[in-house]
Each structure stands twice: as C-alpha cells, then as structure tokens.
Length: 349
Image (tube, rainbow, N blue to C red; front, side):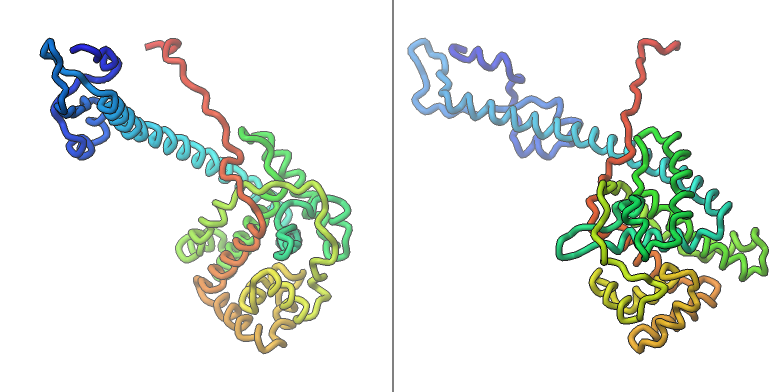
C-alpha cells in the first residue's frame, strides 16, 4: 500500500472491534492486534490503490496508544501493589520487634508505667486546633519542654525510652525510629501491660491463665488503626508553653476544658483516667464529682470488673489512638527500605 510505511511501527491490522478488545482479560489484551477502519471516501487513485488520509492514520495510532496504556496499566498497578505489600510487611515486622523491645523494657521497670502513659498524653495534648501545631511530635524529649511543671517526674520514663531507642535503632533496616512514634508505641505497650495484669489478677495471680484469659477476651484486635498511624515526624523545637494542665493538680473543669479543646468530651476524659496522674482511683474520685463525667467513670469501673472489660478497653484504645495522631501527617513509607534484588546469573542451579 502506498504511503502507509508508518504502519510498520504498529501491530498488524485485523478485524476486531474496540468493544471486543475491551471485553478481553488484560492478559489477552496485551497480545491482541488493533483494527483500524478506513472510509472509502473518494479514496481511490489512478493505480487502483487506497489512499489513507492523515486523520485515519492518527486515529489508528491513538487507538494503539490507548490500548497500550490499558494493557500496561495492569502491569504498573501490579508492581505498585507488590511494592505496597512489601512495605507493609516491612513496617509490620519492624513494629513487632519494637513491641517486643518495649514490652521487655516495661516489664523490667513496671514502676514507670504511669509515667509512660502521662508522657504520651503530654506529648499529644500540646496540639492546638486553631494553629494546627503541636501534638504527638516527640517535642517533649527536648529539655525546655521536659523541664516544665506539667512534665515533672517524667524524666525517668524518657531515659528508659532513650535506652530502648538505641536497641531499636540497632536492628532497624529503615532508619532510626522517631521519638514521636517511640513515645506513643511505648504507651501502647504500657496499656497492654495494664490490661494483661488485670487479667492475671482475675485469675488469682496465675500468669499463664491470665494470658489465656486476655487472649480469649481481650481487645487486642482493636489496635489495628493505632498500628497504621506509624510514621510520625519529630519536631525540632519545643511546643509552646501553657497548653497542658498539671493533671494531678488540675480541677475537673480545667481537664474538661482541655479535652474539649482537643475535640473530646466527658466520656473520653473518664476513660483516660489512667493517664491523668499517678493514682488512677484518686483521679476517678475527683472526676466523679462532676455530673457530666460521673456516669462514664462508673461505667468504666463496672466494665473493669467484668471478665472481658470490653467497654473500657475499646473506648480507651479508640481515644488513645485519636490522641496519638492529632495534627500529624503520617508517613506510611517510614521505616521501609529497598529490597536487595537477586542476581539470577549468580545463582547455582
């Protein structure tokens, strides 16, 4: 055909409709041939051959390119999905190791559980909705912030986490863990310890039976969303002063006002009582003096007396998860790393 050398760069032409092609699976569309239709509109020439107009050529080329995009997009999507799965597995494995390290450290220092909880709370509650600043960004590690009255007595917990961080960083393949993540993950481990200790007490102090009870009735599965909020970035400057009450000296109104400013209410204030001072029962007694908070305090006290304490655990995990991500842009690729490619030529078969 005269004037059609351009088609030597395209697939052969066969009689298949675009609708037919699109109905095929991606694996078959990758190998089908494209059909271009030409209109005989006064196209004959003296030698009897067809003359193909430029718009027909461009139309055909557009079809070819479009089909190539359709077939190749499946490959790109597959590659992206595979990369995402690899990154999720890497993060999950890293988190499992972190939990093991922190669980061991907390088990060796059970006296620091309350301080760890308050450390995480104070790092998070610097969040200011108006300016969208502060939040769980690790700034509490900085000495100007740690030295404030509301953070008094928390330095031992921070020192323990600094030591744990050295161990975690030593086996991390995706870079050092941020203090922002470390502090919240440590509080998670501390919360889990309180849940497990409660189950053990209900089993008369038998640790094995307590673990079985917690495995069977505990709310461990509720931590899924918290685990995904992993990839916080450390602040390099302390958060502004005056954003956090001194919990063990604050009035109920001051605590309510702070929680309201964060977007929470009496329910969340009551369920976070373990984070609000060294003596949870004393804190709950104070909170119960407020008519808005009292029903929730009583609800969670009743829940903790049950075998499963589901209401208490679920609400605590939900509230803590929200606190732990206030104002944070989570980097979902944090702690991932390139996978070393296998050189097939060097494999001995």
